[in-house]
Structure formats: C-alpha cells, structure tokens
Length: 349
Length: 263
Image (tube, rainbow over all chains, first blue to last red; front, side, top):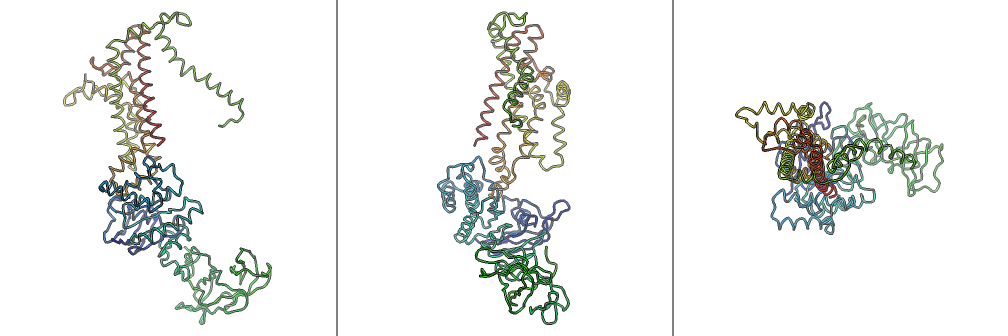
C-alpha cells in the first residue's frame, strides 16, 4: 500500500511571479522527505500543488502511479497537517478525527475503532470529548495529526507543523513524529520546514529549496558533508565559504596555496572552498591558514575563533581551550583536505 | 479605552447619553406612552388606560401580525439563501463587484420604486403575481438581500481557508465542506444577517403599500392606516405590538448566535 510521490517539472505562477519553477522531485514510498528552505522559496507551494490547492501552470504531479494533476483535493487521498492546526472549532476532538472517515462513508463500527486508534497513537485518547479551544497548542497539533492519520493516507503532508509551538514542545513533538513514522513505516511523508534541525532529525532525504527552485537534494549527512551549492552549505549548518582560484595542483586563496583536489575544474577558474567550522584546527598542519584573531567567543564546551585570513573571515569551533589566543594575536589554522568541499562559485541562491 | 482618567470617561459617557439617548430612545418611549394614554394634550398624557390594546386585540390586528411575521421570515430565508449562495459563488470571481452592486441597488433607490418595478414586471402572464402575497414577500426579499449578502461576504473573507482545505484533504466533497464546515463556522454571521433582514422586513412600509392584496395586510400598513385616519393611540398600540414581536425574535436569534459563537 506504499505510495510514492513524483513532481514532474511543476511550475506555479501567481500573475507574473513564478513561485515554483520547473520543480522535479521523486519521493520513494515510505520515505520522509523534507522540503527545506527560507520563506518564499516555493516549498509550501510545492506541497499545496501536491494537495491540490494550487493549480500548476505546467508539469504533472503523481501520487503512486496516478497522475493527480487534474484531480480535486478531496479525491487525492493525502493527509495534511498545517501550522495553524485548522481543527474544526465546532466539533469535539473525536468528531474532528472522525470527519475524514465519515466523508469516506466508513461503517460506524470502523469509525469508532479507527478514531480510538488514531487518538491512542497520538496520546490524545483522554481528550476525545473536548473542544479544540479547550486544548493547548501542542495537544491541538496532536489531534490534527490524529485526524490526518485516521484516514490511513498513503501520503502525509506536513506544512511547518511545529512552527506554532514553543521550543520545548517542538523537540518533544519532533521525537513524537519520528516515533509515529517508525510505527507507520508505509506512510510517505513530505515535510515542509524552514528549520534545519527538524529536517536533519526527521528526514530520510532533504530537498533544499531557494528562489522557487530545487537547489539540492540528498540525505542529511550527504548534504551536510558534501553540499553541492553555496546555498546548501550555508543553509544546513554553518560553513566557511572562501573564494579560491583553481591551480594546477590544488587551489589558491589569495596568496595561500592549499592542497585541495580541484576535481575536473579548469585551471584559473574561480571556485568556493567550503569547510565546516568544527573541522578547522588550531596550530600548524596541512592547509595552514595564517591570520589575525578578530574575535573569541566562549561557548561552554567550545571556543569559537573568528580569524581574518587574507581579508576573509574564517570561523573555527574548537574544543574549549585552556588559554585561548587574545584578539589581535597572529595564529595559524589548518584543515584536512578531505574535510573540505570545492563548490562552483556564485551558487548562493 | 482611549480615555484613562475615570472622571473624563464618566463625563464622556454622560455626554453620549445626553446627546444620543433622546434621539434614539425618546421616540420609542413616546410611542409606548401614547399607546397607554387616555388623552394627551399637555406635556404628559392625562391618564393611563389599556383600552387601545383591547381595541386592537381582535383577530384583525393579530392576523396582520401573523402576516408580518410570515412575510419577514420567508423574505429573510429567501434573502439569506440568495445572499449566501451569491457570496459563495462570487468568491474569486470577477463578477463579485457586479453582484454586490446589483444587490445594493434596491436599497439605493426609494423602496416605492422597487414596489413599482415589481408591479410592472409581474402584472402580466406568464408572471402574474399582482394581487398575491408572493409579490409582497418577493419585494421584501429584494429589499433585504443586500444586507444578507454583505454580511456573509464579509464573514467569508474572514474565514481561514485552512478549514476548508483541511476538510477537502480529508476527502470531503465541496458540498460536505459547505454543510459540515463552512456553514457552521458562518453561523454567527448568518444569524446576525437573519436578525437584520427580519427586522428590516417587519418595518417595511413603502413598497408594501404599493403591492399588498386585501388578504395579506402586514402590520405596518395597519399602523399607517390607523394614524392616517387620526386614531393615533390605537396606532401606537399596534406599533408597540410590532416592536415587541420584532425584539422578541431578535433576542431569540441572538441567543442562537451566542451559542454558536461559544462552541
């Protein structure tokens, strides 16, 4: 019963503005795919095109092996959970959860059983006879999830489901969603968020979006370790992005030659060197960068050193130093060649 | 509160009461007093009596009251259905403005014009309604639909589309979304609109005067007829009857509204 999702060159326009530009993405059955991007990147539009609330100007949307592009929302069989919960205020919790089953004309006994099951699964069984306004935000979101799960959808769409909750509740709900997916491994999830922590925690794969386009797609580890664009590198985690020039035996950051394999890049071409701050070491080593300490931040377990190297700011996150260098001191930083990634220049959004 | 000083607030409230209470409340007080007066030649009436109520409490007046209530209820229902339907249908359509103007038109012209135009339009077969109660109800519906339409349109604009989208994603057909989600959520606005339509229809006179058949005489016509022939006090008693009934219905409707809003 597993159902995949496929976007085929989906373009959505509002008037003259293109909010989603030839979007291609395949989500495997049972996979959790996060659509990650800043606001206005087109991620919610992609989800709404899948749910049927916006009509693509071009392209096709498939759920399973069905082309649903022309189907109205109520025939698409996707569950949806939105940021503002959208529980029906005039119905009690159990009636909210039963809504989809009644719309499908399920037998009464089955409705009762499935409502109980869905409320049990989300830990809301004790609240069946409450009205939504009598529940906290986190509880309302649980009911919204139960309501979407009760119809046993092949695909569950989550549109910033945790954004309205406070930080503590959010991490609890995140664990809860991960547990739900372990219990329901057949459900394919499309999870729209602007929060990288949510995406990294929950997703099997992340689709990074910016400026109405898909920028990058891969497993969280892959995107973190081997980003393909400057945008991905800076949006997922923090990154030092240094403008370098490709040379015959590596790259060059202004006057400093670095031993980083340039792949197939042409000699003399500009590129961007990406190194994660926690992979930068202090002291002599391979790929030494000499510079002046601009700032030292103590962060409990780590020290963050901001060093100006050849006119560029390099950040290093180091295990807490017994005697951190003062601002203005000359220091040497280094990084291992295999910790660095060379990106095409000018791929920042 | 814009004004924080307690004394200033009191003074403003007093000024408000002094300026507006006479304009809004005094006329009604006069009508109620007149309906209970024996004679009224000085500043205050000379004595109190229930004779006028006894005089109007015969079948004739009660028939007129029933006629008025039936007319107002039917016209309000018609107006609500038409207004809501139009408001729902015009959403996102370019015809929205045109429909709005069309509904407001009857309010913008004197209602005798509405009466006259209905008379002209429906006096020949196949639409021969002249001399029937239907044409009175129709006129009232035409006159009050604008209010139903506007209040439903405003409520729809405020309604978060997330509700209907959630319902649709759960598999509810557009009809089911309308009946189970949208209408219940619009209920407070619908009942407010119903109350307004009912009250307007209960007091309508000008168009009614042109259209009413002898067997369908609404109460305002009776009030007018009574005062026209100089029977001011019995006319006042009829007017009080009209006001009391309208108020009673409005109270009942507002109870439904409070219940709907508090769910």
